Image 1 (tube, rainbow, N blue to C red):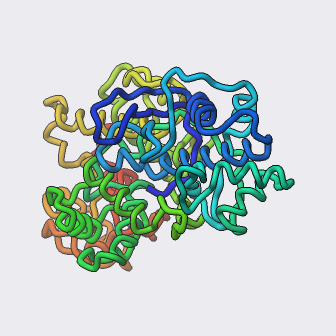
Image 2: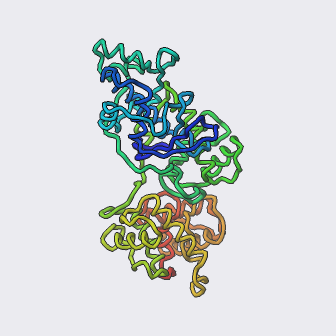
Image 3: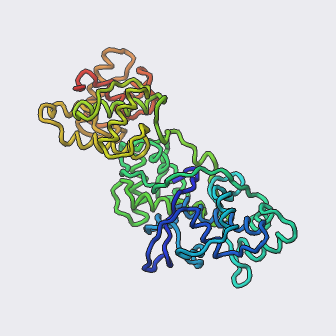
Length: 447
C-alpha cells in the first residue's frame, strides 16, 4: 500500500514470461541493473545517453517493485527477464565496466513526476525495431550528440514536469503484507492504509461503502467495506484482510491510480504520510511504547526468559533489555527495535498465552485484555466487562455518561469510552486498546 519508495538490496527475476514455467533467480539490485543496462544499450554510446537509459531502467524497475506489480497478481517474483513485459536480463550475463561504474554511482536514483512520490513507469524501446510512448534508446544517442544532458534527454521523452530522486534509502525489502491478518479490532498504519485504499477504490466501485474514520482503527465500517470489496472481486467474504485480499487491494488500487502507466494519477506526500511510527526504539515515548510494555509485562509474568517490566511510556534501558530478551526468545534479530516483525511476534505470543493460560489464572481470563481493540459493533462478555468498568467510573465521576452492561458496543458505549479517554488523558478514539483496558480493569489484572 502507499509508502515511501525504498531501493531493495535484492530483486527476484523470473527467467521467462510471467505465466511461463521458468526458474526465479534472486540477485543484488545493482547487479540486476548492470546486467540489464549491459544488454539493452551499448557501452560506446555517449555517457549522457548511457546515464539517461540507466535512469529509465532504474525507474521502470523501481515502479515494478513499488507497486508490487507481480506479487499483487499472485506471482512470487518482482520482474521478468523478457522485453515483452519488462527488461532484458541474461542470467550470469556480462557487464561492461563503464556501465557498472555509472550504476554504482546512481543506483539510488529514479524518475518521478513532479509532486508525486512513486517511481515513474519509464517505458522505453529501441526506437528502431520497436516504437513506444516512452524513451527511444537510439534516440538518446542523437540527443546526447547534440549536447543534451541526461536530465534534458529524459525531459524530451517524459515531459518537462519530471524530477530525479538521487538519494533513495536502501533497505532489505520484505513483502508489504503486514504478516498478520487485519480484522475488526486491528490498529495501526496498515489498517489506515487499507482504509484509504478502500475509499479510493470506492470512487470507481460505488458498491464499496465509504469509511468515514480512516484513523487506523479497524472498526465495523471498515469491515463492511472489506466485505463489499471481497464480494465485488470474487474473494471469500469474511471481512478479514489476509494475503489474498491485501494483494488484490494493492492491484486494484494501483490500477485506479494508473501507477504502472506514463500518465499515472500519482501519489503525493500526503498519500504516504504516516501517523503511526514504523519502528519504536530507545528514547521513544508515548502510547505506542506503553502498549509494547503492556505486552512485555504480561508475557514476562509467565515466561521466565523475560524480565519484569512496568508500563511507564518511556522506551528506557529496562524496556530495551526486555525487547532484547523477547527477540531472543522469539528467534528474531536482536536489535532492541520494535518493527513489524517484533510487533507481530509480540501479538502472536500474547494470543498463544491467552489460549494456553495456566489453570490458576484461567478464571481471570475475562479480566485480561483480549488481544484486540474493542470497537463499535463488537458484542460479548468482553464488552459487558468493559461496560461494567465504565459504570463504576460513572459512579466516581458524576459527569460520565451512563451505559447499560448489555454486551453490545453501540453508540452509548462509544460515547462513554470517549468520555473515559478524555477523563484519563488518552487520545479520544472511541476504541479500547490495552492501555485503556489496563486503566479501567487494573485492580484485577494479575501483574
